[in-house]
Length: 429
Image (cartoon, rainbow, N blue to C red):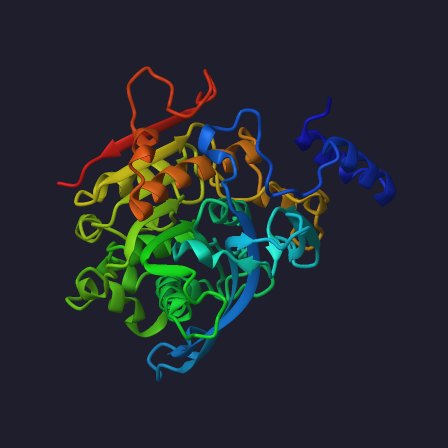
């Protein structure tokens, strides 16, 4: 049977109709499902007892600094910043209502859209009878969008979490702007969404989230540039060198969240109880030093591929893990995986074709050369369930899933199915 990469090479040499036929064969009738559970999946990857609902919201942060229209040495401009949010939540289906739905999404090639299939039901009634659920905020990479980790949104919602994924303005597939905008806005976007979900969760807000979400128990998940934002939000103040480094926002605007700024430490939000940072970008380019990483005190699970060529491993994610000396932290490593370890959904079938615009295969934005996406998604869902279950819900029965014993299989994995994974733990000093 041809490998996927072999098929991709064939595509450029055949006509469009034949190419589509080859793709369909190679993908084994791939249907763009984000809810697949592999026979190799660890125990906690299975969906939980709740049905999942999904809704789309917009939220506007008034008078945010406008990086794109601020010039070095000139006045700092401001504008309203509107973010689109996708919210997955525990739902109560009506009699006869079946789980499942579809969503048309923009892919890595903005000219190509794909239809994703999952279990969440659009606009389903929220399951408010069981009280308020912890909040999990999901932040994508550069570029990306709110559906890139939708497998995690659906999965956690079925287990009693409200999950909100952000479309970061200036950083999505169809709205990619100067990198300086992403460098500045990531932590502010994540904190703004936390405040907005807390407001909507209040009684009398008029939102379906009223009484459904408990923002006092919040977890963060960030991938790549989303992970960069997470590291800063939980205490990793930027280094002084990064404030004026190549590509930095103008007028020293990163200084507001630098470790050397006495006011930065006061921005730590006690509602954030735990974080997961997947391939966080920035360490290898000098955004953190020992002083900055020592400011992290929030418990954090780092996830990385051991050959990450984008965020780095030894000088990237692993260095952050080692440098966060005051935090209780874990490092889950996918051995021989690159930057796409765990986070992205399986590549939609529509991305298998070569893109003349990108001069590449959009497929590669999602996939890994060694690891299968479904298996990686299942593993991430498993550990996120354990980690957030323990730290946001106090479920002590989840603690053993985070314990490591040399020479033994990780708990929840069938025999020999944790091959290629390492899990390390360091306590804060």
